Image 1 (cartoon, rainbow, N blue to C red):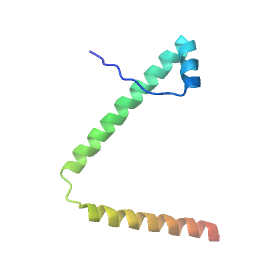
Image 2 (spheres, rainbow, N blue to C red; image 1 turned 90 degrees about the horizontal axis):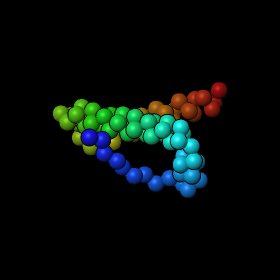
Image 3 (cartoon, rainbow, N blue to C red; image 1 turned 180 degrees about the vertical axis):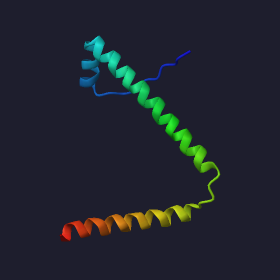
Image 4 (cartoon, one colour; image 1 turned 120 degrees about the horizontal axis):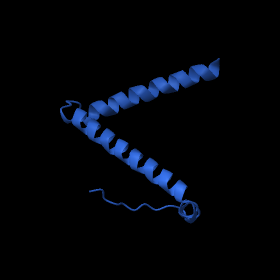
Length: 80
């Protein structure tokens, strides 16, 4: 059986959603689909990472390399 969760929204947005039943239905559907998709993505990533032999140090090195390459690419674009 489906369960309900509560989210906080700015008052103005809440008022707009509550004032239009069609909009509320669309928003509920979008949020439901996005939450399910996001949770499944996280679970998939967790499952893939479960058997990884990468250490946190490895991840930091890869992160640094990627950022350096991005910086170089941006600098090359600016120098053109």
